[in-house]
Amino acid sequence: MKYAFISHRNKEPDLGITNRLYDYLSSKKLAAWYDKGLHIGDWPKQISEKLRGASVYILVASKNSLTSEEVVDEIGMMRKQRENNKKLLVFAIDDYYFNMEESTADYFLGSNRNQAVILSNYKNEEEAFATIVNYLREELEELCNNPDDFIIKDKVLLSYKGQDMFVSIPDSVKEIGEYAFSGNTSVKKVRVPDSVENIQRMAFMNCNALTVIEGMEGVKACDPSAFLGSGVVVNADTNFSVCGVVFGGEPREGVLTIPDGTKTIAARAFVGCDVKKIVFSEGLKNIGTGAFKNCFGITEVEFPSSLEHIGKNAFANCYALKKATFRGKIPVQATEAFDDIKMEEIG
Image (cartoon, rainbow, N blue to C red; front, side, top):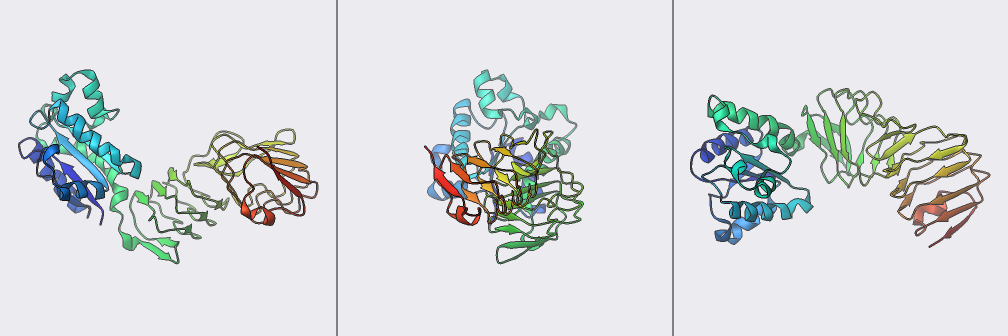
């Protein structure tokens, strides 16, 4: 079960804000667990386990809460879990930590100074907490998705029925199916986990409020129509791309340059493209099925050492292509990607 670990002191104003925070999380069906205000050195094993298992850590602090040394200890322990993609949210509810030496204040608040809620600036505690909620809404919404809204079969996300603004696709999903989010006008941001390898046609079609796609590190194939009619911003280069996935583009004087930052070239991205030479950027991991099929003018290709996967028929019917060079290991699928050509590895 996903839950938030809340660190606070059982004194005002910490306790008042924390009680409101607990009610807010409950309304979003996200469980909360209190540390009961114990010092870092007194935490028994069960509390440490709760901290490790939490999806998000929320630290509520005021001049009644933590000394500068305790701030460093507590936030340091929480930050160790960031490598597991867990969130750390810190809220200062008075100006105490601003009066510390700059290094301590920066360590405490980091770049998120908007998370400092100075109670004296508000009419009452309720108004102050409304500011916290505005920040929490986007940060926590994706943790609060209802599992029943995801229709999944054999690791394929067939449909999303929810109306959340921020959607985190479950880690069990390997493929996002056709029309899975099509026509959803509520979703604004989608996190695609590393487990997703394929995004099918029209998956996010006409999601006009959708402007942010995160993740997609594991995507090996993505249909060019996946984001048709959505609000996802594309790059300003000649190539159409989303979050490191390139869907197409135009060569210049016969040379097609794949932009830096590209992780995946989508399936059928350049079918029939009039290109003679391709310049691949380091960092490219995946080339989709049929990506360069029927590109009759290509005579030679050299792949970066980062390449891990080439889809079936990626270079089918490239009749002028006689040789493929790999700066890294030749992917095991490469034999199905090309017609009868010579392939070699170079150091």
